[in-house]
Amino acid sequence: MGVVHIGLLILVLAAFVIAYFSARTWHWGYVLVVLGIFLSTLGFFILSAEVLRVNSVQRTEVNRLEVELSSFEAQNVALEKGSSDTNVINQLRSAEVRIAEDAESIPSLADLNHELLLATRDRGRLWWNVMPTGIDQTGAVQISVERPAPAGITADSVVFLFEAGEPQLPDEQGRPQGPQYLGQFRVTQATGQTATLQPTLPMDDYERQRLAASRGPWIMYDTMPADSHEVYAGMSEEQLRQKLPPGSAEEYIRHGKELRPEDDEFRQAGFDETGKRLPADQLATAAKKSYQRRLRDYALEFDELSQRRVGLMVNMAAGQKDLERWQSAQTAANELKATREDQKVKLNTDLAGITKEREAMERHLAQVKQQLARGQKLLADALRRNSELEDRLAAQHRATSAAPPAPAVPAGPLALGNVN
Image 1 (cartoon, rainbow, N blue to C red):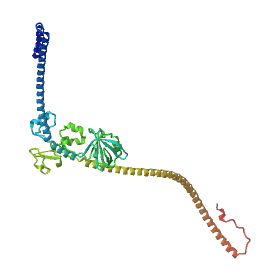
Image 2 (cartoon, helix red, strand yellow; image 1 turned 30 degrees about the vertical axis):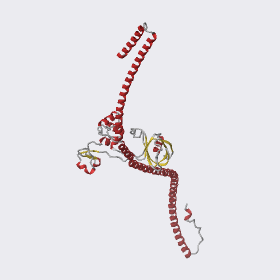
Image 3 (cartoon, rainbow, N blue to C red; image 1 turned 45 degrees about the vertical axis):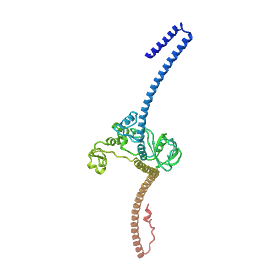
Image 4 (tube, rainbow, N blue to C red; image 1 turned 30 degrees about the horizontal axis):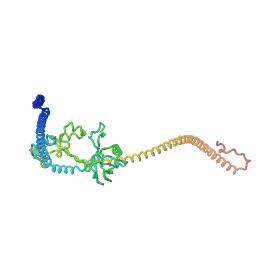
């Protein structure tokens, strides 16, 4: 309780005491009137003091708000039209506006809009939170877009689909995991917030399964995102190794660092004494040289990989057909082989039988030859005896013709009759 409050309390008590003693000499009505006037005057004094206090507090607050308003108006003007006032820039930094620490001025909204327009033009149009509503066997996709409205998707345009989310490295077996690039598509139909997309290149079974298993949300670009050195600027070696495959991380880590003897001229960047990048034809005059990683044209590389994949798919299909034909020919050859084996068995059986018959015939031929030789010998003997007999008969005939006839003597059997 303050001194003023204590003084007022004492005055009130004194007024009641005075009124009590005055009531002995005054009429009680006068006492009440005087006491009421005193209390009313006291109340008016208290209310006037409170009004003055409130007025002082509110005026101080108004003055503070006017100062803040002036500061905010200056900040708004600086944000809208740009400024090089250090005080305003520091005030904006303290208000958690993102301004570079070494910035001596801030651009205007018009400048920022112009830069945003240029960046957007380079990047191309972009649709967030694209959701699939249907996928058929050929890979055609029906999508819906929440924002912007209208979506502004143009029929017969080419778009690139990505799964939304933080990318991940492949697993230990090299299989992809996490959000993936889904492919290049052509818009066959676009109506309001929906569209139908058709793959520009044939999809294999793995790509169709991956597309069917992806539930969204997706990010859709009408221009393939471009590679840039600024994307990975400021990242530590550990962060780069966590984000990039082992086969590619090294060149990203070396970007902007010292050259090595084996680096070719296309990986060299030259700078003058002020740190300004020099053209390639002035590399020999550079005050400093550093390694520069290769910027990738993702659209071209994905297209080349897709063409190679299609070529591999065609070769695989041709190889599969060749394999099927080879398997069919092998089956026919095996059947023919089985037939020939059966024929071989039969022929071997026939050969065995013929061999036995031949051996029997050869034995019989030997016997026949023996009999023939024997018969020829007997024939020769018979011919010799017949010749001798003929000579004797001829001699007897001559003798008989010269002498008188004699009684006939019966002749013996011919020698041929003795042939067995």
